[in-house]
Every structure is written in structure tokens, then in C-alpha cells.
Length: 425
Image (tube, rainbow, N blue to C red; front, side):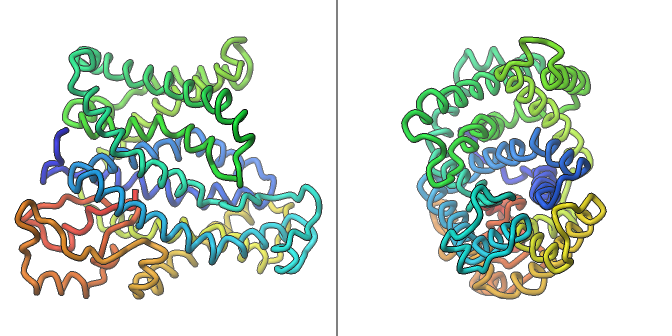
């Protein structure tokens, strides 16, 4: 497996990750009511946003394995993902669920809600994980990353793979077929083997979602392992592919073609559309964000805080404004804007200024003694102390765990930029 070169920059992935994370506020604001505008946003998001999010996560997970090795990568990611997950789940989600319940149903006290004294079949989004389900998937993927890197490294070095990825048409055909086949296998295996054994997701765990997005996570790993050949071909504009995929998706959802209207046809057409739009989004982002951007860096750092806190604040704000489920897009847009304002302010004025809060909500733990190659980290103690004491718009100079952060680690970089390599995802 090729190791990350010091001059590798993926700033466009940084920008895309920020957009995907922050887009969740619009998606979850749609749960406030029955509005076609916001429901359309949620539907469009479901076609590509989380799949692309996990694709980028797979890319960067493989990068971390190349830098730190399998064992250390797994330990770091389990801590940086698991601690914010547990803290948010325990400290915020019960209140968020209670507010969501009261917004869509007759009011009950918080204690009655916790004891289950609610109406039968209550309305509203009441899955106990809420927006945190993606962290469960990331924890599973963290455990799978070393095996995925090892297996796909052998695939990349095989002659069959080399022949199948010679030239862009073959690259795209191989990627599309691989993702489609693995998607059908994952979904079919879940329904044939997992559901009969455990029933529907036990304890409301996102078992199905984790399997559904695994092909895209693995595609991200593959793109990193063969990034010199595969990534440039993958992130070139493909408007014809997008147009064809869009027509097929429309035909499947509208039932214009019998085969495409089947459940398998819908899954395959959606998967093809996801790959097509991903290719074009990567192409646009690589051109618009070819290098570091201060605004992108700030949004990268803040997006994790916004995502963890936004569901809670959506329902706090809607309740304070005395809205009800009959509201429409202007009110939803107001709630969304206020949620952005409150969560960005919390990040900037509270989270960034507290090492403790950065640990429990952003998973930023001090790096401690790092291994700088075979001879350890030989950076001057003064530089290390300055790094520990510094808080910038991008966050503290501690263990980088923000969802949208990637900058290269190299001897000629200052400590601030070197530390920005460390991702949560």
C-alpha cells in the first residue's frame, strides 16, 4: 500500500465534508412539518449526501492506516468517535427526543416521557439515536478499516484489477459495477440472513444503514489506495453519466419501466445516480477548492459541533417560537437559520475555549508522544508547548478529530497545519 506523500492535499474533500455535515440541519428541520420544499431537500440529500460522506471517510481512514498503522488508527478513531457519541447521546438526546415528542404529540412531562408514559404510536422522529446513527456506522467501519485496507491493497496490486482500470471508461465501469454488486449483496444479505436472525434492528441500532453505506466506504478506501491513477479519473466531470443516471432514476421512481420499478431496479438506479453525482461533485469541488481556504477551514472545524447539537436546537427553537407541525418552509427556514446561528456561536465561544468540551464533544484528545518515524517526535519542546496553548479559528492544536479536516503532515509545515491531519472520520 502506498503511503501518503507529504505534498498530498485534499482540500476539496474538506469543503465537501463541510457541506454534507451542515446540510443535515436542513434535512432534520424537515421533520418539523409536512412541507414539500424541505421534504424535497431531504429526498435529494438521501440520494447522495451520506453515501458521499462515508466515501470520503473511507478515503481518509485508509490514509490514517498508512500514516499510523492499523492498531493505532483503530484506537484513535474509537476514542475520537466514541466519546462524542456517548456524551451527546446521554446529555442531549433524551431532551431532544422529549421536545420532539411534545412538538408532534400532546405534551407530557420529561419524567413521564422517560418512563414511557406516552400515547400509542406517537408521531415524529423518535429513534433514540436521532442524528447520531452515523457515528455508530463509523465505529463499525473503524473496526473494519484494517481488514478493508489489507484486502483492497491485494486487489489493487492484482493484474486483473490493473487491466480493469486502464483508461477512464474502464475505471468508471469497474467502479459502477463494483458498487452496484456490493450494494445488492449487502442489502440482500441483510434481508436474507440478518433480519431472520435478529428481527428488525435491535435496540433501534442502524444495522441496515451501516450495511447500505459500506460499499461507498470501501470505495473510498480503494480510491485512496490507488489515488495516483483512480482518483484523477474518478473526479473528472461526467455530465452524460449524470444525465443518463437521472433519467433511469426518474423512470424507476415513476414506474415508467417495469424492471426498473421493482425494488432491485430502484436500488440499482439510485446507486448509479449516487455514483454519477459523486463524480461530478468531486470534479466541481476539486476546481473550486484547489488549495486551503480560511472559510473552509473554519467550517470544517465547526461542522462537527453543529451536527451534534443541531437536532436539539431545532426543537428548542421551534418550541420557543410556539410553532406546530402545520408550519411551512418560511418558518422551517427561520428555524434552520437560527439553529445555524446558535450552534456556530456555541462552537466559537464555548467549545473552542474549553479543552474539556473539545474532548467530550469534538473528541480532541492531546496527541501525547507521537512517533516521528523510527526515531520518535523530535520537534522542539517550545513548539509543542505553543501548539498546546494555541486556539485558532480551526480549533485547538490537540488531536484533530473534526469531520472535515485534512491537511498534510510534513517536516516543513508549522505545527498548526501538521496537526490538522487528524480526522474523526
